[in-house]
Length: 220
Image 1 (cartoon, rainbow, N blue to C red):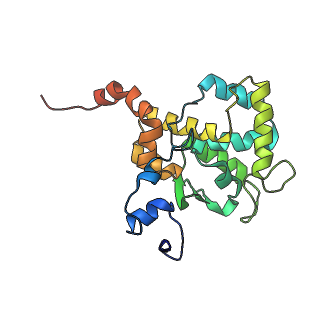
Image 2 (image 1 turned 90 degrees about the horizontal axis):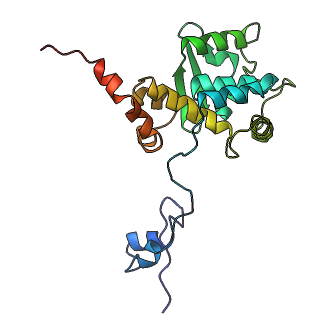
Image 3 (image 1 turned 30 degrees about the vertical axis):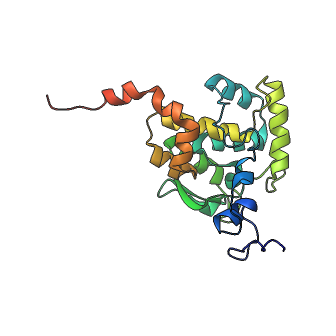
């Protein structure tokens, strides 16, 4: 007697194979699935968070358009790919916002005054369809390009070997939280979720709790 075929859900023959078979009743036990060990390092909270000194040192060793890309990641907390694809028309001087599309879909990211001034400068004299952040050749960025430039900059700046472009995004998110920006606002502005904020950045929401609580005035 042959085993029954795995059921399909939404025309997909696999969910996690054995676990799907157990969940849908095709097999009687999920023991085999529960014995599988997770991949090392997956799903763990972030451990590398750059300091202000390290970020400044990195920028000192970043040149041209690459430095500009790094700076925009720092002031927005956006993913580098989202910024690399942004056009002049995506920046609203009226609202002080930047429309971004990426991993989590489309969103409107609100800019700080520093960010507003940066994107005002980046958009000056350009047509609406032009890239806000082209590379030094005036072309769209490729992930491999900024990866290689980051590798070079982190080496000359003597930064940890696991410093990548996303380290600047993590730096920006942590700075927002330490400054007291609400986790919900931070999540929406940077295109992540409250769950991810709590998982990876919880320690930063705890750092200045006394300071935040001292801002609360009650009638006694």
